[in-house]
Image (cartoon, rainbow, N blue to C red):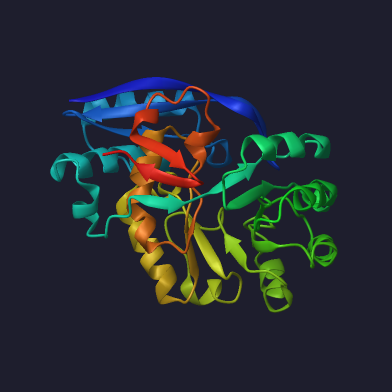
Length: 307
């Protein structure tokens, strides 16, 4: 029988990105025959707690998957069934080599520049930082981050730039910074901007919001250098594996990412690590009261699965 429980995740720092801000996150745990998986609803895809609760009521009545349900809800159902069918062994189920320790980036939400030094001092062990920006006005925040650390910066705009010209101006200002890549600078619908940027980009451009359940490989080769795959966006681990392999097939860099999740969700996503060039699985590290913290520990910037 399926069961559901809500978990309220309190964030250590206000989570501010280009489109919204929050201090806590409501996720859900789906249980089935002793196995658990996580639902991390995302407002970007019109998902919230009421929607997830309504889906679960439908599930209890039908016990069958409805493909119109939120992708994050389908992810948890698919993952918990995958665990059930394989005695909890996701590596066996996915036929992916087990990676027990990974270097993850650590996120810096949008904040005032004068808050950066203290934030980095408290989180100094990581090898990469991912900075959330909103638009060209975030230059001074990025400038302060670069001043405070010499580690590579992954810049994530979450669709914040509304014109190619604004982004190119921003790019020119940061050309000498230690930037590893830029993630989703424009909204999903601005395909022509991505195509125009591609040949003149100074940094690799990674698709996030532009990838859900699938993508056109030939088109992406003209728009992006890589893809960020999150199981919450694509209905679970099996589809995530397919997308990561497809990305490699088309010569794209691959990243495994996450939402704000407990260590339960992060431990599941880590089963994809062997297929990734980049790991961005810090979602549970941003949480003050992670109920599944026993599943993962952090040592010198590495996420390590506890046995």
